[in-house]
Length: 231
Image 1 (tube, rainbow, N blue to C red):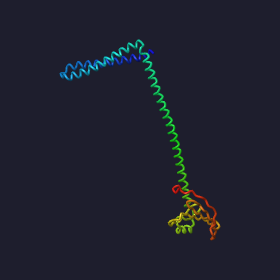
Image 2: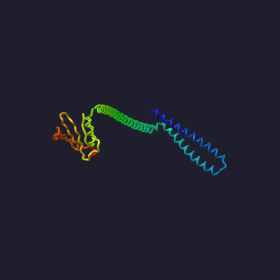
Image 3: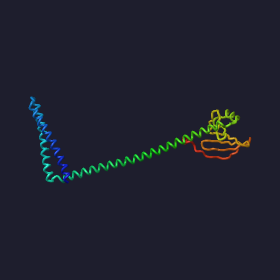
Image 4: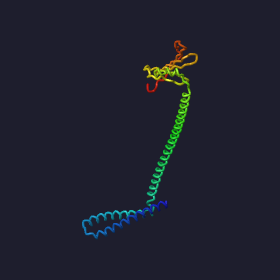
């Protein structure tokens, strides 16, 4: 307790010193006013300074009495209450600061995980793009190496763009404007004078088989999922 009394005593002495310094300054100002010849100004300033002097003297008297009360132990309860209040405020401030730090740490951890996931996702996308480009390049090179039959190429010149041939897995489309019937027809020649005919619509894929000049025969039918923009 003695250390708290000493702290309070030092605080009171500092306040007393400040008040006495201000009183001395006011006294000097009052002395300087006597040199002025402006009676109205002197009266106004004197009244103002005297009011200030009165307040300062009251404070000096209060602080001197507090020193007496402090020495008698009268202020012990007040000092302890102030200390407890300040301690509580400091504790609340520290708890608030710790909570803010905890929230920041949690947010930083979440942001770091999000950034890492995004980085990993970007790497995967970049890898897939490179794989796709590689596969496209390889496919293009294979296409260039293919010996597409000239008679089929000649036929494509007279076929609409919604018809064509499937040659070794590659689609070759006709060069004329497409027919507006919503059907894509692809012919796939196979060995033994066999032609597989694929008919595609927005909802189904129907496969026929044609041998030589005979009629086409139904083989199978598969439902197709319409494009998203048509749903």
